[in-house]
Length: 312
Ligand code: UDP
Ligand code: MG
Image (cartoon, rainbow, N blue to C red):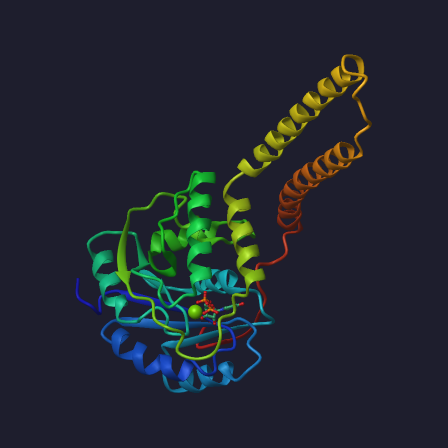
């Protein structure tokens, strides 16, 4: 197929990236100008001048489109919105901070033309991420794949190409929780991997604090597995079993070795703490799922659009 025969949508979520955006255009445009493209920026409630920078480019280039959110809704929601508006035969998502090198787009499109419906960008090494982020991320994906039926490829983030078919599947989803890394794997489309070296952030700081990373990880696990609920049951069995042994021990101690028996405050305290802990963990796990159900039944919109540029 000729390069201009199909439309490529590039979706870029943007949250306070005024320092990164001016560096993005000179590297991205030469790559995508070979194709018939549209460049969709989703401004996720930026408080800086990101909005103005994009609008300025959109004025002279009608292929550059902008959707601005009413407030910050989060990275995954911004990506979902991009998928809602993208008209391309394939849609590529990448970060605004040049951590995903735009040159890889050519390789992704080549794979797509071979017939793959999803092309994941896989990080060759994670030297640019901190040791902490690397190890926790590694652990998370192993744990996640152990817990759920959906197997997320390792070292894959949100830099990927999706065929129109996959995008339509995502658009049709009614669920509010958007753990896209799992959702794209779920239907079982034909996928390929393209590896790349993840670069350092071109400017500015990461928006993923430890708290955000943790809640992202929880979101992933809760949306794709109910195994933690089983875990709560197992914990209950284990603690009940330990309690039972304790009872037998106490009875024997009382009646058989009554001479040596001293009332054990420590044992009492430890068992109360243990039981209390187990119960709270179990309630917490159930609570996470109840919270998720609550959010789903509220049926609030996924995001609110404030303004659109070069889009109808
Ligand atoms: N982002 C967003 N909304 C947010 C946080 C981040 O749209 O609430 C965007 C951000 O502008 C960037 C991408 O998502 O283009 C990835 O964010 P970041 O680089 O902070 O994450 P990291 O690469 O450190 O995981
Ligand atoms: Mg980044």
